Image (cartoon, rainbow, N blue to C red):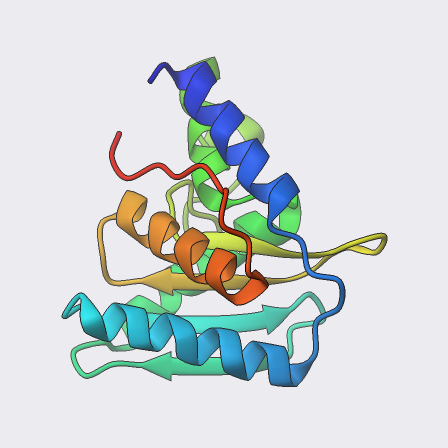
Length: 164
């Protein structure tokens, strides 16, 4: 796929994967679904679901994760919160334009342009938070999130990106 095609798929994923509402119970169920999928893959990941006001409604770190992983999550969350799009989509936007985070006046210590962060968008409300994962390669992180959010929302026909 071309960069433009990949960007289109990423945008489509975000348009399709919207919640009708999102509660702490939803965060718990979605978070545990992600944990189970990561465990099936034998991955040591850190997962966090955080609302835009900064409140963490779910976090789980598998054995093998540490503070380094938590710092990556924060950078991915900052990117999603600022742009209201997935961190992989931000990565693709920068690649498409031949830019870096610095070109957008964003500090790489605070923001990350790579997969692993996805917006929690509520229909007719907008982006209310983020779900983020780290511990795999960034495309696999994004795909794991898309797979689990799709499953949680009972949406079967979501285009996926498994490799770039």
